Length: 203
Image 1 (tube, rainbow, N blue to C red):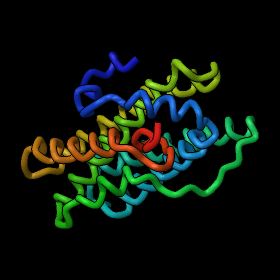
Image 2 (cartoon, rainbow, N blue to C red):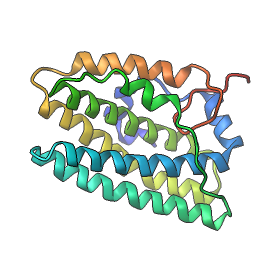
Image 3 (cartoon, rainbow, N blue to C red):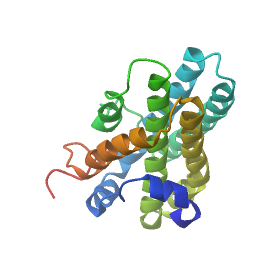
Image 4 (cartoon, rainbow, N blue to C red):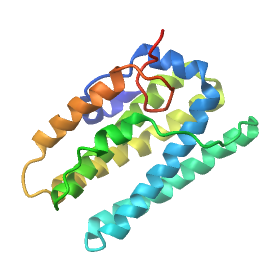
């Protein structure tokens, strides 16, 4: 499925561990719950960027579209949850996003560039995980996750393109820096299952 998005595959440092895939299949209620939270957070992030960078025309255009799509995805996940009597509960955040964001530089435009690069990794990883899970899920969930691949891949590309557009220098070194962090966050064990967690600490 991901063969249609070679740039995304090349961008990511690794595939999701098989142990994480198995963990997800054993925790599908939690998977749906955290997926809903992720879509809502993605929309919120896009809106926050629109408020912070009101003078960046292309960012405003792309983030407005992204926010609408992420809210639609939230509605779709929530609809599936309601159909399956899965409660939408509060969840603690995974270490993934914070593990990346704590390394964002504080001066501009470096802050914006790092934020865009992290956004690209989050969207790319989401896309990769949907593709990894889809073959193992029931028909409804499988079709839904496959339907998300195209938009998640476009979101990845939008974030990466914006990072390049607003940087005063090549972004290769920063991409490499965050790629190394992302690989550790994805492959090192986690205590709690989340959409972007590593594999279970006890297998």
